[in-house]
Length: 273
Image (cartoon, rainbow, N blue to C red; front, side, top):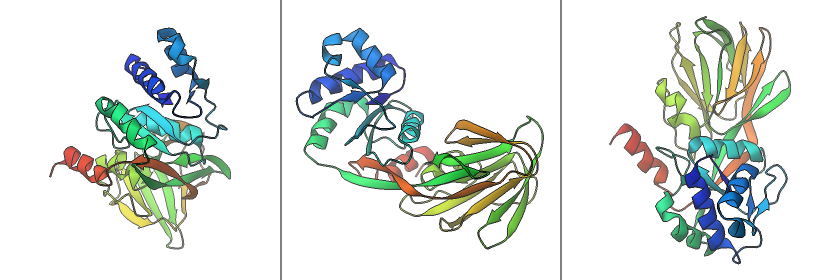
């Protein structure tokens, strides 16, 4: 189990542990959450083990939080395709499946095998040949200096280069197309497709968002100092002349879902219709 830092997450984790104890082989919990569980109910927490996300073999990851918490969990598992089941404690909860009130009935359905598996594509991000991480939502590249125009060159496979200048550029997956990319005018893309959305951020040149095949590798060559953020987390800074390469990852993020139409239902709630 993984969660945000809220007291409510501790309550839900304890409820889950009470229900799952004796029904599953092991319950592993990330450290900060396990510490909170032990402080609140040491007896229930005694049935849980500490989680090492980077190496433990897991059948399922139960995540309590908003989309940010789920994205952090995805990053913790890196290229390991651990099935994730999200309990929404945020606002829209695009990546979650159920609300807290539905927790125990949902756990029963999981144990009974009443669910589907959904796989989402990710993007591998390389900086001068070093793997920085994999993005489930997006990569943001922007200038390192606030208020300064950011210039760069974008290479799209064998299609040639595009020059851009503005506040930055967002390279998004279909999953991330409903996030920051959408707010900049990018297209919403069906999560079942393998595609990449290129969205200029505050562009000064007449640039428009593009949707391209995920088969094509992208190369960003910044003309200025830059900062790189993967799924909302700053991961690196680069100087002029660095190479940022983006390609479809061989690994995918696996979600456990009950409703195959939940993405579109949540999208309609957000943008209307």
